[in-house]
Image (cartoon, rainbow, N blue to C red; front, side):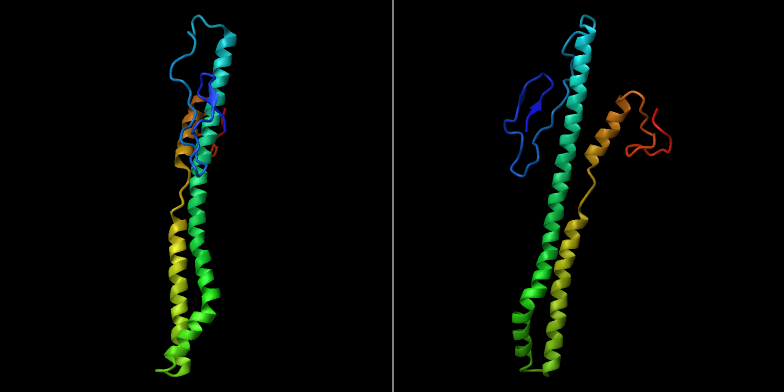
Length: 174
């Protein structure tokens, strides 16, 4: 992955962590590269184009970082659902059959198997609850949404209250 820091310098040195999430996001320089009073129109257009391009790439990188993080949380949560299914399918026959036979030494055989079945349901329920709690922690990419709302106010012809994914109103942009 290459990037530009707004001054034309590109590279990819150490910007991505082991999980694929960027550690930094490109930014637009806070000061003008050229004096606007003495710069030509071509230079100003080139600088504006470069800054818009950098802004767009930064927004994409931010969205990618947030979505990647949330997808990983979702995959970790789904792991508990898979574990619950594994316990139910693979362990049920061997361990729970043994346990039912062991309990049948003290109780009637039907009661022993009923107790073991109830235990299987409890284990499955606990693992499914853990998976649900992990998946419920997923959140929308709020930083990206806020950043896009701010960017929409800068672009000409856009109103933040216009009917768009970023605005809350019912009007049209224009």
